[in-house]
Length: 224
Ligand SMILES: [Zn+2]
Image (cartoon, rainbow, N blue to C red; front, side, top):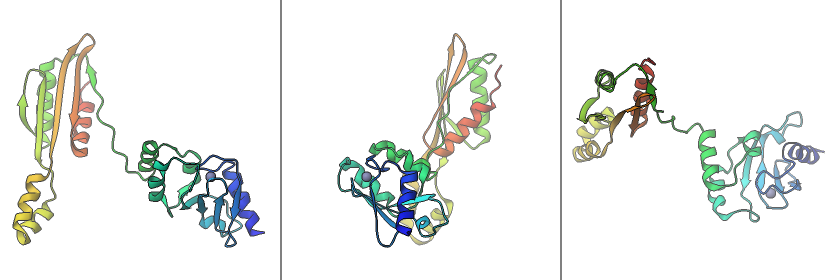
């Protein structure tokens, strides 16, 4: 009875195996919580199988497939092992290593904020955009370290954790100095160019913090 319930849930949500995409052909273990795809031999499990009143929401990979799949995917699939993923994830799962890793990062909320998009302004000259950039970045603790007619480079202090630095100084002086030397600086490069459409402003950054400030700066510029 329960075995049949588990199989029905699998077929309902996965008429094709989420990994090898073969037509549903599942064996259910006597424990009723592990299901094997008979084509690729991947095993799945779910807490949701335990309660016959429940629908299937989350499914975990119990063990990766042994056939029918690109070898390079196995290492990524192993990282997913025994972690519950929503059935939507499985239904839309990418079968290319790079795409799957990207999908996993997004699912886990690890994806990076988007880099700033260039903006084109109409009523502002290159010089006035440059002045605004200096004003905006200075107010946020950035220094102008290099400047040409079209490119301004700003740099923040060291990107480091002050507590770690102080603890390091107290206990491990050499470690603290090395930590200070290797930690990254936040850098924002503002490039301003004149085009037919207006003054184009573009920012490139090297850290998430700098990216955020560059985005805010671009948004702060008036449209006209
Ligand atoms: Zn399969």
